[in-house]
Image (cartoon, rainbow, N blue to C red; front, side, top):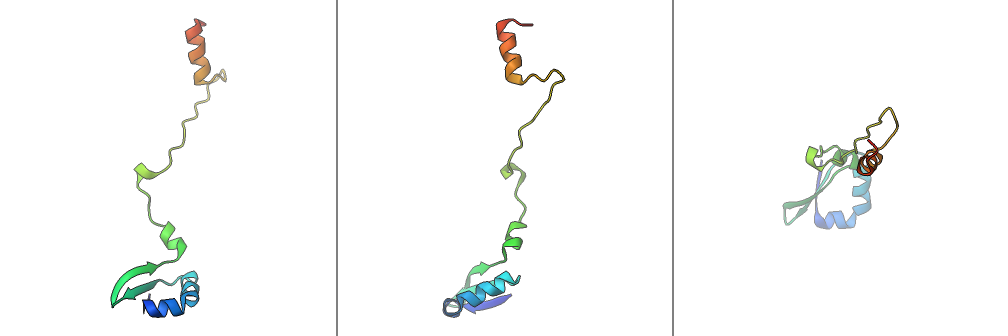
Length: 81
């Protein structure tokens, strides 16, 4: 991990991004205190998403007769059973 003051980051932003692309982490300090970290994108994406935030895949039930749920409801309303 590279730790640099904000003034150095401003002067060498492109070089710091090159380091991040190579897999390094860059911590930026303002008045000697950490205010930001640049991390490689792959590491940032590796953070696990809680189950309640994950996308839900719709349930696809295939009936032997090929009818959809909507078709079954319509048939029942029309008295087709």
